[in-house]
Image (cartoon, rainbow, N blue to C red):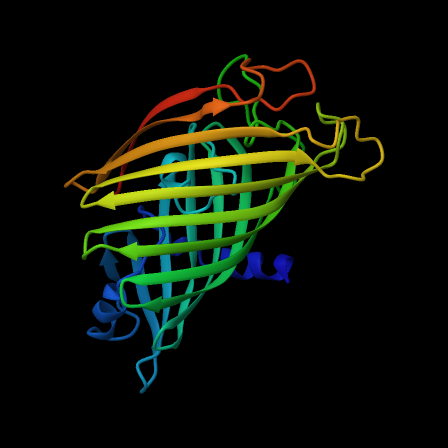
Amino acid sequence: MRRLLAPMLLCLLPFVAAGQGVDDANGQLAGQLLKQPPAQVAKVKSGLAVPLWRGTDGRLLVLKAGGSNGAQAQRDSLLSPHAVDASTLVSTGLQYGLAPNWQANADVSQQSWVNSPLRVVGSEVGATYFNGPYSLGVSVGSNSTPNSTSLPRVLPGVTPSVDGLTGFDSSSQLNARGRLALGTNSGVDVGASVGRIHLLPGNLLGISTLDQKAISFGVDHGPISGTLIGRTMQPLAGVPGNGYSPDRRWNSIDLGVTWHLPWQGSLSVGAQNLWSSGAPTNTPAGPEPDQSRTPYVQYHQDL
C-alpha cells in the first residue's frame, strides 16, 4: 500500500507552490472553497488548494499543495526527517470531507538538497475529527531514501545525516495531534508520535533498527508561532548483534519560533538539540548518533 500510494501522489507534484501544508482546523478553507467553481485555484495563507469535486451534501474533495523549509516542517510532522539545513520540503495531497465533523487526507512529500540529486520521500494517510474549537487527528506515515546509499554532504567536513543518523534508510510512524483554537488566529497544539527507523547496512551504530518516540507542544498567535519538541531513540530490543544495554536511549529537545511576515515570507529562529543526552561532536567517530546543538536562523519566501 505504501509503495503504491507514493507514486500515485507524486504525479501531483507539479501543482506544488510555496507555503506550508493546508490547515483547516476552523473550517475556513472549506467555506472559502465552497463559494467558488470547481477546478479553480484558491490561495490560502499556507499554500494552494483546488476543489476537484463537490457533492450536493457539501462534501468536498480538495487537491492541496505546499512547500516549506526544515524549520517550518518540524511543527507538522514530529518524526519525519526535517533537518534544518540547505533543503526544501514540497508536499501535495488530497483532502476529503467524510462527514460534517470528519476529514480524511492522503499526502506525499519530498525533501531535496540544493547541492545533491538525492531526496527523502514521505507519504502519510490520516483522518481528523472537528468539534467546535477542538480537533483531533491520527495518521500513519513513512519516509525513505529511494535509490541512494548516503545522504548529501551539506557542509564541508560535516557528516550528512537525518536526525543525526548517517545511515538512515527508511522510517514509519503513527501520529496523533490535537488542537484547541483560541479564536480565529490563535491556538494551542499538542502532538505525539511513535515510530521505527531502519538503518543501512554498515552504519556507525552497528544496528539495523531503532525505536523512536516524540511529543510536542506548540502555540501560535497571529503571525507568531512556537514549538517545543522532545524526542527519544533506542535500539530495538531482542535483535541479535545489538551491543547496547536494554536501557540505552538518546534523548533531545528542539525549540523553534517562526514569524510569518506580511509579504508572504517567514523568519524562523531556534535550535535543534537544545538539550540532548548524546555526544556533542559534529562528526562522531564512535557508535553514537550526532546530537550536536545546532542553532539556526532561516528565511523562507513564498513566490
